[in-house]
Every structure is written in structure tokens, then in C-alpha cells.
Image (tube, rainbow over all chains, first blue to last red; front, side, top):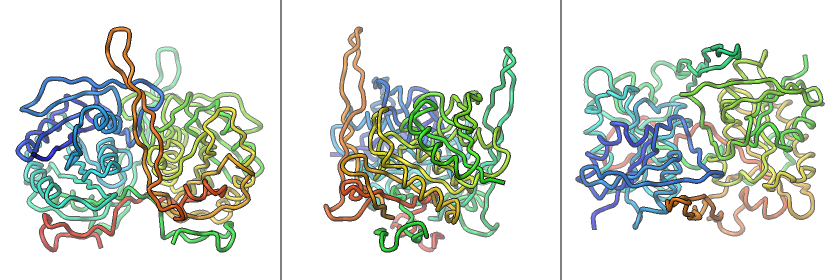
Length: 258
Length: 258
């Protein structure tokens, strides 16, 4: 039996990136694709607990079975696994995202939220992102890396509780190299553009710019992207910070982390 | 000047848990509270990038300045920091959540999403959760622990990029002990209840039960809660899995994690 590959994204069922991803994966296995019915960027691992969810089959794409839901990327994985998957997928591929998910973006990203959810199901899971936000993005720089990484993960699997965050630069010459690196420390400036509505009430729209806090030559995912190299970050599902020492306000001897 | 304490939650501006938290914190500093205008459970670190946000001042509570937004918990932190905070908070306290955020729940939790966001701002941040989901929950078991941990964190701070996930059991005798532990490996069964709408179309509602994958005597946050002990987990903002080894499909010498 051919391996089953579960595809999802956060840009929604009409985003070009997901069709590009499916085309690369179809030679490797049977593809089931479950995507949100509209864009759900920056949904992180949000899930729907207090509202009804629907999943609806739409037209096949080049032999891939296609479904849409009214939920988040994590809902797509959970509901897809519950309702339309008949055997355990050998790979969950999320993306290809329109926009970078390097550095702190991994925390907010719906693309990576879905990959983390796949990982929680015990499925080897990879999120792919191209640094170009445009819906007209050219995904051709991604293709050799999607092939190589997907084939590699299908062949070798991934360790338990680890998924991959792959980011591909879209500027300059097409990348020829990828590196396994750490996520850069960085953050957004979180500016908001302020508006006044016709009733005189203020509203706000998120904007802002990203700052990389790492030294210029520190080799991170952001460094890779700045140098035309594809970044691969291994992302842990387990968040416990084992390097944290017992603070003064915790009674002695009451730590059981180690 | 008194320390500034930023309070938020994911159960919304009307949830009893947040008023309980504010009452404990008011003796320690000036409190600004920014909460979602309605419940936003399981919103993880979701944020609003493609829609307008509003923030509105509501009636003060016992001297705390109170605001509501139409956004997620992370939006509350970002927009609150941008619009209503005049100096860097010395503590961000999120909760008290109505329901457990132990084990894998830390990933989905809006309470912890807000704490992670506070941590990304460089604010010592703590999420507090009581294991009782009820809106009529009795928060009295939390009070000594909210006091002790908040006073401790205000006094000693927290290491960069680490926040705390505190869970407090609500059953049995009131807890007298807390421990610094790791998060339990575990997951939800992800069942969905299936319904048929009046038009004959199916819809689904998430349900399911939690399974702890750890051995019975492994000391984790779930173990603490099962044994009437308050669990404190140090949560890392950095997700890079440094224990991941170079897979066969990555060219030799191209790893820069270590």
C-alpha cells in the first residue's frame, strides 16, 4: 500500500502554495488534503471547542482528495484525522505557507500549529514556508527541498515529539543549500496603525517590523534566509524548560524536574 | 513607584477567575487588566492580523484599570502594551483559568498563550489555572499560591524566555504543597460528537478525554494534580529541539545547531 500523506495549510483551500505542495507529494503517496475554507494566518495552535465544525469534500486535485473545514489549521488536522483518514499517515506536510515562519513566527504560525498537531498525533510532520507573502509567489525555489525533505522523512521518519520548520528564501538566486539550525531569537515591534471609524471610535490594525536579536554572524534560521540558504529547524512539542533552577520562593527539595 | 502588574485571561472580562486574581495582586502593585470581551478558550498564541481590533475601558475593579478587546489573549497583551501601558510591567499574570492547563494543554491554552506573549515582551509572566472548569468554581485553594508565586516573581524575576505554568487542583483537601516539575506527555482522544442539522448536513463538536502517557509514578504536572499538589512548570519560549541529530537526507556538515 502506498504511504498516506496528510496535507494542510493555514492560507486556506484556495492558496496556490498548497496545490504546489500536493503536486510534489503525489508521486510519493496517496494524498488527503484538509484545509481551512478561508485564510487562517497566525492561528497558532488555536482550536474550536465551543462551536460546531463542518468538513466538506471539494473537487479532487490531480488525484488528491480535497476537503475544507470552517475551523483552524489544528481543527483541520483533528477533524480530518477523525473523519476522513482510514490509516495512519506516514507524513503530514503543512504549507507551503505564503510568508516566513522563521524565528518567533513559529509560535504564531498556523502552518506550524498544524505541523505541531500532526506531531502530537505521532505523525512525522513538516511545515514548509516560502518567505514571499504574495498570493502570486513563485514557489519554484521550494520544489527540490520539498522533494528531498519529504522523501527523507518518509524514508527515515522523525523522532517522537519533534517536527520540522522549513523556511525557503524567495529573493536572489534559487537556493542550493539547506542547513539544520536553531531558531533566531527575535521579535516584532508590534506597532498598530490607529484609525477612527465614522462614529468617532478608534480601532487598530496590527503592523510592525521584525527585529533579529542575534549577533550578525550567529547561524540561525534568519541568518540562513538572509544568506540564501534554506533553514530547517527541529521543533520540540515539549515546552518544559529543564534549565530553570529552583527559585527562592519554592520550598527546598520540592523540585522534580530532573 | 509601585510595580505595574498586567493581568489578562482567556475566559473573558466577566470570568470570576480574573477578579479573584486581581484581588490578590492589588496589594502588590498597580494593576492594569486587559481581557477579551468574551471567552477565548483554546486560542493558543493566535493573533489577529487581518481584522480591526478595538480596546475599550470598562468600569474599574477595586482600583484596577479594566479594559476589554475584541481579540485573542495574545491580542490583549500586544494591544494593551501598545495603547494603555505607560511603563514596563514587572509581572504579567494570566488567569485564573477555569480548567487545567497541564500537560499538552499548555500548547492550546489561551491563558498560557498570553503568558508566552508577556514572556516575549521580556515581562516575567505566569499563567494560573484551577482544574475546575465551572464558572462557579471556588478559587480559594489558589489564593496562597497566587500570593507566594506572584510575590516571588516580583522579587526575583524570571530568566529570559521562560514563563511559568501553574496548575492548582480543586478536588480533595486544599493543597499545601507546590512543586517545580516537567509537563506530562499526554494527549486528547479527540472524539467528535456528530450531529445532523435540519437540512440534513452533518456537523461536529469536539469532545474527548485526556490520556496521560507517563508511568504512574513519574512526577509530572499531571502527577502533582492527581496527588493534590500544585504544579509549577517552567515553559520555554524557544522551541528548537537541540537533541535532534542530522538526518541522512541533510548534506554532511550542514548542521549549525550546536
